[in-house]
Image (cartoon, rainbow, N blue to C red; front, side, top):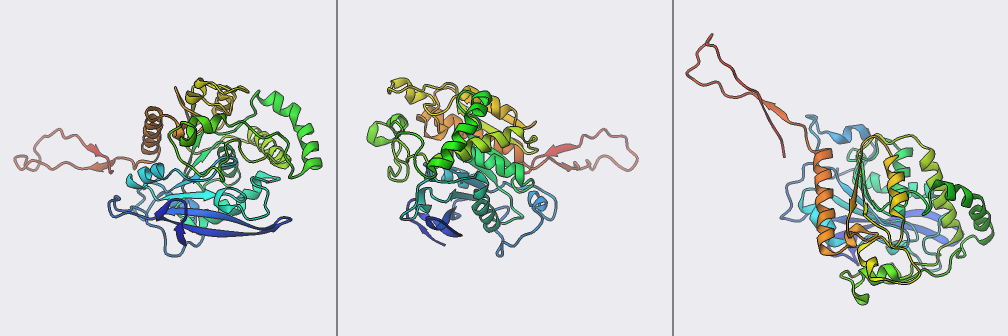
Amino acid sequence: MSTDRILGAGYSTHRIELGADDEGPLVATLIHRDPAPSDPPPSDPPPSDPTPSDPAAAATDGGGVPHRPPVLLMHGWSDYVFDRDLMEHLGRRGHDVWGLDLRKHGRSILPGQTPTEIDHLSRYDAEIGAALRIIGRDRPPVMLAHSTGGLTAALWAQRHPRTVRGLALNSPWLEMHLGPVTRALADAPVRMLAERLGQRPIFPMGSDHYARATHRDFGGSYDYDLALKPPGGHPFPAVTLGAIIDGQRRLAAAGPLDIPVLVLHSARSRISPRFTEEMRRADSVLNVRTLAAAAARLGPEVRIEALDGARHDVFLSDADVRARAVDLLDDWLEQSFMPPPTMKQPDVPETLGPGAPASLDVAGEETP
């Protein structure tokens, strides 16, 4: 691994070789937050040899006590992993923190490639599987995934049960804007266009509304690389839209997930050809109603939180909303993966001799 050129000191990257396609070599990039001296002592340090083992054993150590799981961040479409502050926060709370730039996104874009191009979301299984092997198969992480990354993470969890502890989905693109009926109607025409256009764009260049609400160059509060996350997004390949619609269809037809799922999203959408100030405190990318309806069908352990004032990436919202989103994430991680209470027998007072009657409560003591 080498020092990450974007996040800098304290972060290292591992290049994952993925073979080649018709545009040339393919790579993905795994980012790791190196443990800091001030971090809590690691309860489940990475294995020295991340060889495959039983993923079900990852939830426990030899004594059967769960630990804080690793967290693997996954970006959305035309995006990359860059939220150092969030990664630092999770690390300081005792999580081993990783991020994954998928092929043809962010750090993984190579010269001559069509950014974001993919013809089937299952192709991402190669880099996700490689990332989990590096993290350690006996240490399945929680996937913290945004937008299209949330769809990809949910599909991975459906196809590969017991490889992740849970999903924390940040405005996941689980459904098209107008719902499943519209998606079904669009499916065949989009597939035809994908076959015809291939890697060429299916849409004109997108608006810069989201960047105007988030990036400091446009009056927002956050800094990110506009070459890797362009204001209007990269040109949207036709095959990529076809892959997303196909993934949404397959996810809707799949059975429920049997792992904890957290879904964070804005309380409202504001989607318009013209920028308005309301977009600074709303989702200007996805329809949150169809998003939430699809999220509710993911499984029996789904917690859905609508945040008033949140943007599409809830962690790129104004400071008050970001803080609320981080608190909700922390709470869900604690509630879903905290160790169960241990039973501790109380000391018997010396004044009670053998045979003396006593009424003693057994108190549960939580292990942090």
